[in-house]
Length: 550
Image (tube, rainbow, N blue to C red):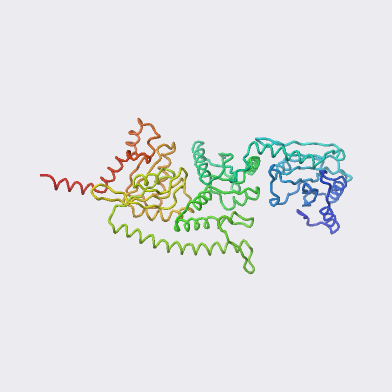
């Protein structure tokens, strides 16, 4: 296949390129002397760099026509990386000015994981002169490159098939020592780009790491950058992004996860540089939601949120739609595949919204039934993984699913909590909140938010053992206020008190006017239960006391 800037070439020159494309070399040669001379003579005539992409069998896969300064390597994504981390392809191209391999050449070698990057210099007579070539070295940490310079191309003495076989084996051995290649999980490199304080950026990265663990990703590395200004195209600078991608490839990452929400243009721009999947924090949360939603309501809400998120990010290169969309396909008359996908997504969004409205009517009926029962309604809210489901189970002796992961619970659960004198409270567990909740995810909380509107009291549960608990309190309050729930009565409850200093606990509770519990220890619930009885039946108890006084 001929790629690049072929405009303006004569028919004879195009035929010459086609003859190069049909050539095949012995597998043991980097490039045959005959083919090298043919390439340099044509390059001299055109005054352009010419390049070849060659596989290990010696077959020329691409002939690339550049300008006098560079060639542009075509998309090689269909040629996957091997177990060694090499692609099994080499690039051999011409240099018109006797210059060695450029920084861009070496970057392409690293980014594309080529077997070899080579440059043949073109003499004034069109014959090959110097030869420069470079290859990656088998290393456990940062990428290293070995470069070779030959003053005379014809002094090249390299059995390429033997050389690349040995290099392949060494790189695979190093990979096996440092990477569990049998681990089938996605390997993620986490990236945070922020202008906040170093501590806040690190705290945010720690939370992203927890989200990745919840999504069952194998986190292989983290990168934090605090730039003076954001790059509108890549978020980070292009040079820094290439460094990150090379670092990720060295460690066999399959996924780049950004802590910041990326614009559709940023995702497209980054995806053009790397074959690795690129997602942001919102998409990671949506993937967790999709995995953990159990009820019909929850599944519909999450799918709707996913579609609304992915629609503006859909591009012709193929965003990760297969996981989200399943059977989208087909093609209407006169439509491109991309236009068809967008139209089908919009149609499905409309169907899901109608379905959600229908399910919402059922939720309204259930809520009205609870309200008519005249029982107080308590909703447990709080940051994700604060222990809400564990507390509900302990209070009501039920078995709502719990796990030490973010967003372990996505569906609301309702139970009755019984008190003495045949008194009861309806208590609901809700999905946990998280800092800076993107507007695109609010729809996935719809059922939870409807429950909160009817609550007589919100139990704001806080993981006191978390060093960021104060920020988490503010994040939850901010979300509740933004949802017009700021006027709801709230009771702050500190959880996991068995993991904090018993000496400091009374002072912290007084400072925040909070009640303390350990959801794993039912004997710690006394103060909480007393506070609930006081909130709901204080006047009734006062009347009983007055009525019984002599």
